[in-house]
Length: 520
Image (tube, rainbow, N blue to C red; front, top):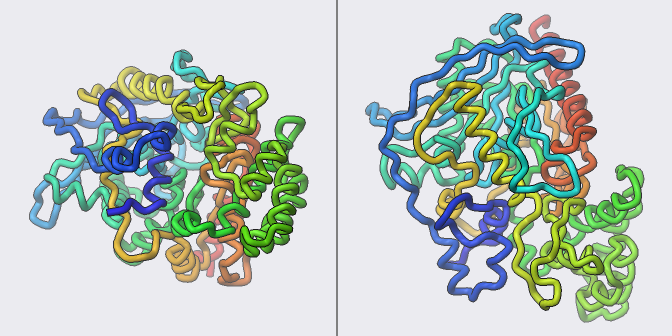
C-alpha cells in the first residue's frame, strides 16, 4: 500500500535517535522504492517492563532579570486505563507551578511537540520552560555541552506549564498490547489519549477552575484544534487560547503537491525570498510584500498555465531566480518549481554547503560536494539531537530528581513509521476543528507562529489557509506572527523575546474576555 505523502513529510520531520533506527529523511531519496517502503514500515516499539518511578516533587528559586521565580516542579507520569481498569499507557509529564499565586485562578498551559514521535523537550528546554539550552548561531554542534541556563523568556511568568510526552516519546509508553498501541499511534487515538491526560491531570491536581491554554509545535500544532474540539465536546473542558508553533494545518496540500498542485510552490516561495533577504539584513513581512503578492498572484496564475506554456515557464523561472537568489539556469530548467531538497543543496552551491530545511541560515559542509547527488543530515534537527537529548536526561535525573530507567526517546522513528493517518481519500486537516472550536467559544484566542526561513512548514502556507476562515464574530481572534529564524525560531533570543511578548498578549486578551464574561 502506498504511503501518503503527508506521512512521508511527517517522516521528514523526524530523525530517529539511536542504533537500528529507520533511514533518515535525508537518505531516503537515494534508496530504491522497495527499500523506501521497507524503511517506512512500522517497527515494533521496544517493550520496557521496568516500572517508571513515582512522582518527584522539587522546589526551586530562579534568579532572572528583574525578578525571582519561586516554583514547584513535578516530574512523573499518569496511567491511562480502559473502562475495565486495565492499563493502557503511561504518559510522562513535567509540570512547573508557581508557589506565590492562587492556583484556582492561575492559567495552566499544556505543551506538546510533534513528529509524531517527538518528546516535549524542544519546547521545554529551547523555548518555554524555566531553563534553556542555548543553540543560537550559524551552526549547531552535536558535541556542544548540554549545559542549561536560566531562561529569561520563560512563560512561567504568566502561566503554569505542563510538558506532556505522548506514548512512545520521552519515557512514556504503551502498556496495553499491540491493539492499544495501534489506537494511540493514530490521529484520533492520539487526541483521545491527550484529552484523557488533560482531564486526568486537571482533576488530580485540583486545577479544573484554572484558565487552560495549549501550545504545540509542528505536528503538535496540528494537534491543537483537534484537542480543543475534543475537550469541548467530550470532556467538558474549554481552552481559552491555542498557540500553534510552526504547524501543518492541512496535510492534503502536501498530498496534492505530488500532482503538481501550484499552491505548494506558491506557499514556499516567500520563505525562499526571506532566505535571500536574511543574508544581508533583517526580514519582515513588509520586506516580503512583493514576494507574497507575486506568489499568490502572477506566479500562481503562470503555474496554473502549466509546462505547455513556454512563455509562462520562462517568466516564472526568471522571477523565482530574482526573488530567491538561486541560479537562473536552475530555476529555468526546473520551470520555477523548486523542491525543498534542491533548495537545501543549491542555495549555497558556491560554498559547497548544505542548508537546513528547518532554517536556511544554518548550514554544514556538503559531504559530497563533487557528486551530482548527496546524502546529508539536517544541520538543525540532526545537529541538536545529541545536546538536547543529553540536556533533558540530565535535567530530569539531577535537577528534578526523576530517575527513570531505560531509554528516553527524544525522536522515536518507530512511532512515526507506525502512525495511522486515517482512511479515505482526504488527508488529515484541522481547519474544520478550528472553525468549530472558534464558533462554539466566542472567547477562544488562537496564535499561529512561524519562522521566515523554515522550508518544512512555510509560513505562507498557513497564511493562505487562514485566509479561508470566516470572521466567526466581530473580533479578530486568530493571528499569525512570523519571526526571524526557522522552524525552531525560538532558538534565537530576539525571536524568543518577541514570541513570548505575543503569547503574553494572547493570554491577556483571553483572560480579559473571560473576566468580562464572568461579569456579564
